[in-house]
Picture 1 (cartoon, helix red, strand yellow):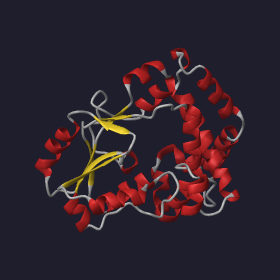
Picture 2 (cartoon, one colour):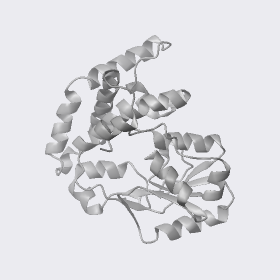
Picture 3 (tube, one colour):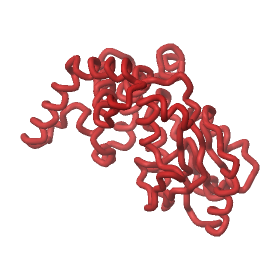
Picture 4 (cartoon, one colour):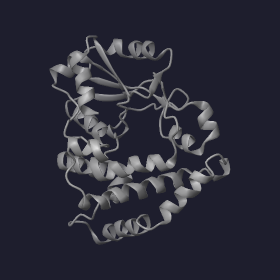
Length: 265
């Protein structure tokens, strides 16, 4: 993913670069909104992050897509403040090419497996004086055939493959990535109460409870009564923990290994 995006930077020819994922469809006014928003700030170090939403029919029919849709901002759910690097939207982002090249900005290609390369890019941008700002240029994420079971696999790889790289490059920022920090192994300098809190979380997530809840969510995906944002977050945290525990059983991620058992295979 990082190599692909860097190749796009190199081959692009316009004033602005727009990063899009290959399973996303821009709305008809997408580029117009991006350019209208960005042009008055030409020469300013700003990365403009557009909105993301899922097909409305899927959101209505599926609790899973409802949850996924609720995780993003869009025209219907605007984000009005400046973004943090944890909120960066690299699947729908506009940035001025000249500034990007002047600052030597690239996606860090140490990230070979899935996860955290986008947050790393946000950290790198902000360290060079860029602001991350929301924009109402929306895309529709066409994640067809998705379900919580498949998304759990994605979170497993984020825990197994992505986070070790993130910690090796940006360890000081781990505490800034929200509740994910509590899913990581214990810090030797951690206080007693924090250690107890972490161990309690690990004990619950490492049990079969997350997998049982996942089966219930999958079975009743079309029943609105069974929707719970907390339940989805719990299940995904459990999958991430599975990835953390698998680190000791796997070798360092390489391009060859990523092509065999990484998320993108």
